[in-house]
Length: 147
Image (cartoon, rainbow, N blue to C red; front, top):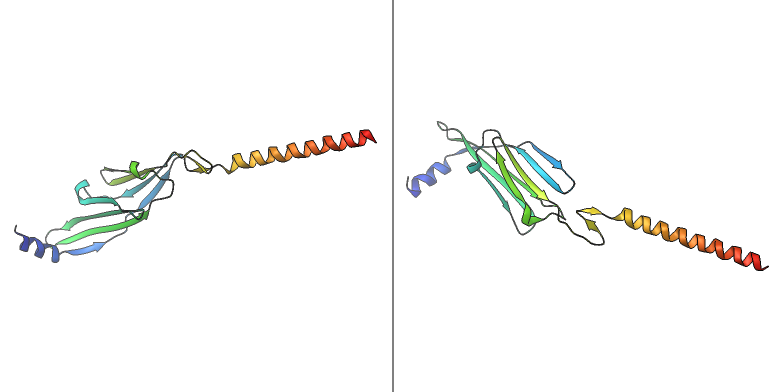
């Protein structure tokens, strides 16, 4: 088929857009998006990441050759903060596309594997307050004993 005939075939397509069923699966160090794509094949799908922090998922397939009817979808999702973008993986298993997004292992003041460490900070503050109160009580007892 030459380029002219290919362009004509593409122009004459009748598209039916749909929104695939999606489900988020969350684990401690990874989030996975499961997309139900019954009837699709791996070569009919595209997963791309852009520089603005979005993941684009696109697919189209022929439904009826006699009427040139096609089914297609297009999804864009924002990649969450704390995600290791270099470790994002897409895996197709008949009827399902799985996109795994591991959390970054950031050791520091605010995050450890994407979980805020407020609990630790609260415990440190509570211990400090208890120490200051205990020291104040001790000093008050010393002052009373000298009177």
